[in-house]
Image (cartoon, rainbow, N blue to C red; front, side, top):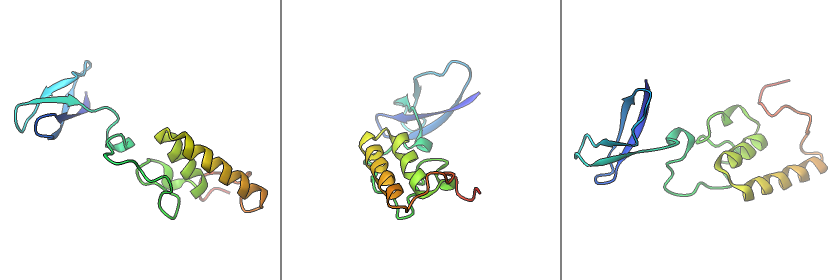
Length: 118
């Protein structure tokens, strides 16, 4: 069994239902009885954002909306977050920033992208 998230079009209620093998695309809303549609991606991956995310991110470079970024170095975390979001412009900007930092000697490309690794 898997846990599936649904959102009601009528009252905007969000609910989770357990489903076996075949997951239905719709369910009955538990709050108002209206039609609740299956949500894909879920909030864990940031698919439910109502406003576009900031491309600059927090000062540390870590986005807490992207699972796994907390263990990455700031430059790797920014690149990973941009790739997860599918933001090609942010990937290009971060690539240019990293290349500039490498040429200026501020970033070592041989260093592992995971924080705390030797």
